[in-house]
Length: 241
Ligand SMILES: C[S@@+](CC[C@H](N)C(=O)[O-])C[C@H]1O[C@@H](n2cnc3c(N)ncnc32)[C@H](O)[C@@H]1O
Image 1 (cartoon, rainbow, N blue to C red):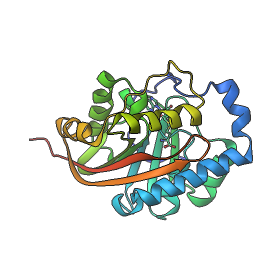
Image 2 (image 1 turned 60 degrees about the vertical axis):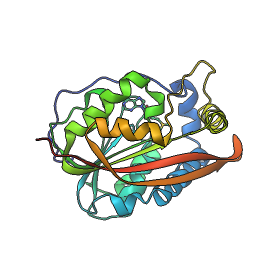
Image 3 (image 1 turned 45 degrees about the vertical axis):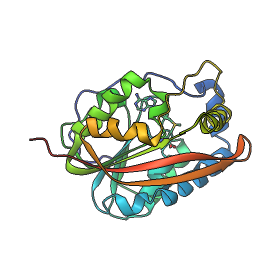
């Protein structure tokens, strides 16, 4: 399927961040992992009130979509909504692609692309979201990704940033433990978390006005029984003068 979006030069895949492909592919063929990721996506979309904040009939972009379970849930909730999802490493499994074709035929497109160089013209999207991506990106590169999102978003467009947001050393330990366990990461994998208070000036500097903050948490019994603190920042792009 294709969505009418102004595409620029294609981008090659790079920057594997989580499980190596040889380990993940067999896991992904398992129904259980798909079911877990689907349940997680439903929980996140509901707790972050994504459906309420994203336009019901606009063109959205999911940056760092992973396999696309969050996009699946966002599309399933509004029959006129369209979504382009990009990820530099992962793409939907065949099972998920078949489901997307059923629930969102003609309304979704998946591209291999890097958020640092989004292959879209300025102002292509009514809304953009990015869920649990930036803490995998070095601090000094996070700005670049946010600037790219600002570029492809229409003036006054909605941007939802969902992140792990530890605010204390104890919360940091809980979040990192969950990340390492869930993503089966090596111990040298860096995590570039920021607290809510640290995110606000970063978002403002990148031209976003934070209109609402939704604090939510999830418990990951296999990783941590302490709630892992998350936050959704609901932003609008300031029109440039
Ligand atoms: C924890 S996963 C989150 C996936 C999905 N957003 C979700 O919540 O289910 C982090 C994702 O960020 C992606 N990622 C890492 N660096 C990226 C970049 N520079 N541009 C776009 N995505 C990136 C990874 O490939 C990975 O799929």
